[in-house]
Image (cartoon, rainbow over all chains, first blue to last red; front, side, top):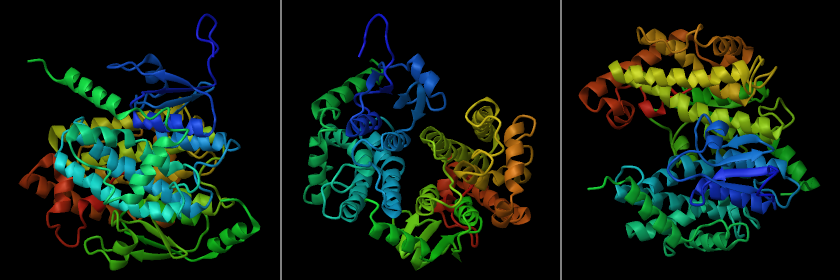
Length: 235
Length: 273
């Protein structure tokens, strides 16, 4: 890809952050579909001109730019990728309508209702009772453990033989699960309680489409510590 | 799953299986599903839930959220209105699609559906649950959100369209439409609050008139006097609880406190758009 002088804009660009689970799932989805993309790392502490222009409503990452056209919201982006590059490799969402609906239901559960909000508390990014948040995640993982059995039908991923939508949505949080275990000194991915999810987590993180975009735990812990230091008042 | 002859006929057989909807008459989330089913011409059995006294069936079919609507199709249950709407399109793809076929247009429709439930709905709910300066701030938020939609109608993604879906209603019309009726109802209940001014939001206003005139919408949306009575009851309850405790958390407080019969818990009320 050209990077100086006459720059030819890449057909697929992602405005995101290396530590952001929502961006990570977009990177992984593109890798699953073997789509080359240019990663535009958002600068720390401020929002780029491009982000503000392409996502004026939410001003948040990730944003997918496909030939300049912006698509926002990670779950919407993944479905877009699945549709546009349908002929590249296995489908991200299952074909069967009920299975599709179940993956969407659980994906919404992960992001909107339970896991994401609780993780923010555990990371110290939002106010809240950490014990409550940990209990919430635990409860959610119990539901997801059962959902895994139903969705996977004995295979390796929620999506079956291949990584799918729910794998990406839940899996992209795994980096922070592990980081939070260290930061908050709690056990989240308890093999005794969630044997299926724990085994799945290892498989997911080792997958070729994921391993290069999933940040290492130590890096996330460091990132978290640095962010906390910056936002704390100096006294 | 590949499209083998076996799977295709399985899917065809599945499409024939009976449909049942558990809902609540004042829930706009329920209305969304009823409207979509009517638009697709699908027969369904309807079971009204008393949200103050939920049935065993509801608790069994939606153990995660215990909320309406829940669609039951061929013995399998599905909660969450927008998940259900997309399911209807996936299961009956050749009948009146709710989502556009173009990937970018689909993404846009999904984005604004997300915005409706993530931003606009809660903002309207906040107006309804608050008073004084807090309410004024919530009203400003609603106006900001409506302005974004108005801009898309005027010069953006939905420019020149009769409906968000184009010439025909689509998923965004269903999502926004089933709930926008609360705007006028709330204005009536709360003196002096202007939420959807025809001068400030002419295109949104025109769209809403067009939506409400559809036969299927008229069959689905309850009569205004019933909605007014309901809204007055909820407002009274929310204000009563707000007076007793944390005003800002009125909807949550309402859910946790003993709700006066027959008003259901505030969190179950789809005061969101």
